[in-house]
Length: 289
Image (cartoon, helix red, strand yellow):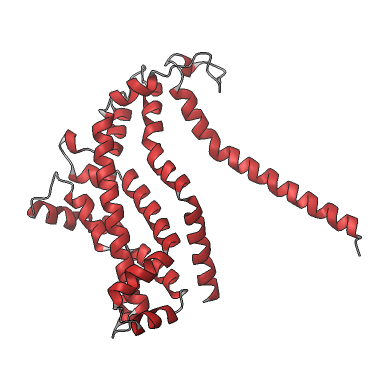
């Protein structure tokens, strides 16, 4: 039998090894971000220096002005923000309503509808792309933001599943007590379920905003006018306008890319407590079942 000191030494070695592994993985994740910022602060000629420098000799902060100016950044930023916020609000609200109905209201065929929604998660989105494009053209929605926003207001199957699983962990006694006080389902949903499920719907909001903000395919398919483009299309056009040219302005591109990635990053850091709490509570509720 190992002594107490030997067990303590093994425990410390295991902890140190775990921390070392976490640090190495963190560096591998953070280094690309640091390298992107480094390129954004360099002159275009300094980017091609060998050996490359992580800390530039000269800091060119003007790149953060000249880079975004190449793609009319404020307009595209506003377009992306409006679309992402509208999609986030619609996706979260409708998914919560459907998840509440499936988890708290007993009606015939409830399990069938649940499995229908869940099975739709495994359907590749590209399968319905052509019919949806034809529908948008027939409704005169082509080259508008409606095809980008309206689908989000039809609920997200994955978010329905998340809210459904989280709602099952909340005791039904809360609903019964509210009904004794004369509350209907709408009151129970807004007054009880929304506050109690805050971690999971904040998690859904972060995921929905990030997906909409980074979406490239849908704006590429539905939008033609430059003044309606999203930031993802603008960044793609910025990267493609110098394709095959030796004088590619990587510093301008990376400077614009820093601003492009900030909104989802800021949103995550502001709500990371609820994000981790929501995923942790969801995992524990699924394990218990």
